[in-house]
Length: 181
Image (cartoon, rainbow, N blue to C red; front, side, top):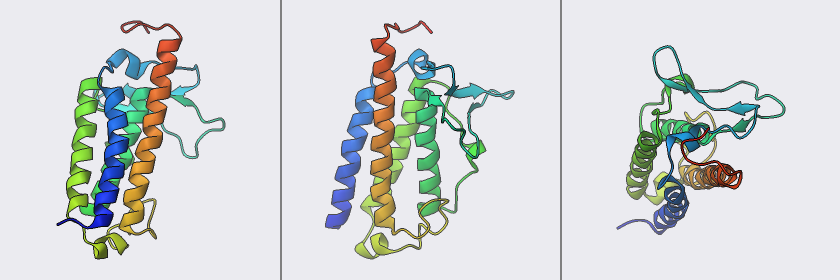
């Protein structure tokens, strides 16, 4: 039997996830890598063929526009980090979390993270949700309960999905066709 709070968190996650699936279904590499502005963060292959994300600390002002590839890398980065800290022994450094290199591989990666998070949520008790033990190692959310972090995951996913949708809609509205850059 699941805890009612867990059911609510999973339902919220499922709503956010269904919005991402809507955008993933026909996404291709060209649209993922389309740069909507000259000042834009994306992912690029490094000398070893790993797709690494543009990143700068502190963020520049103004913050650059981003590609869908960058946004989906960002989802993978924060979700990998969150799962690793909340349900594992930590997470790799940001630089070690790379984009899979294509739309299909990216969709599979994110689907795997979604499923891993959902499975772990299902096993939580009220005491787990109220605890900060699992969140103590997070770079963000150290003082948050696991329930608060789980709620944040759905909010962050929803925000990122909106960004993917906006970039995708902008690409189409500007008359770009698949295959053109």
